[in-house]
Image (cartoon, helix red, strand yellow):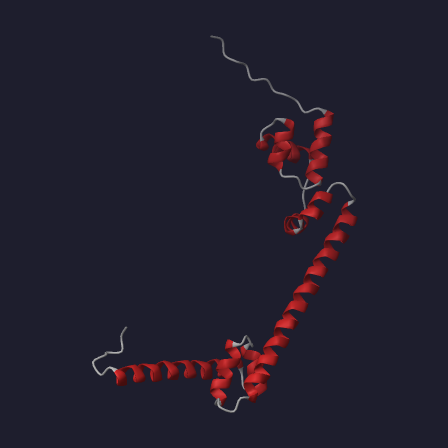
Length: 180
């Protein structure tokens, strides 16, 4: 049986135009290869031969972009796409800042409730504020100490409460060794 001769199929002008267009639109090389019925490695080699390059920064932006912006890539000018991406990104940042401010306001309100309680010691109030979601820095600013100081005080409170519960458990059951 005669061997099949593998022929070298040259790229047509239409295929090169498609590669340029799709590559500029950030279509993955594998998909370009599927459209042309060629291997992804062959497409990659042709892309290098054509001197096409994707900016790493632009590729990173594209990979983080939402689907509706990815669909626009290659259909609108790059500057216009970049502007749409930046407006989307700034909107996302604004929403994240708003959510963070709301969370801080809720934690501050919870902190005010904790401060109003007279049955808690200063240390217990700090531990309760941290449990309510306040940051160590915010708690430290309220009490005029560093966040490390707050951390040490909170750890002291948790160790003290663990020791107290163990002592109560041992008082109820003198045979208990303290291990569960």
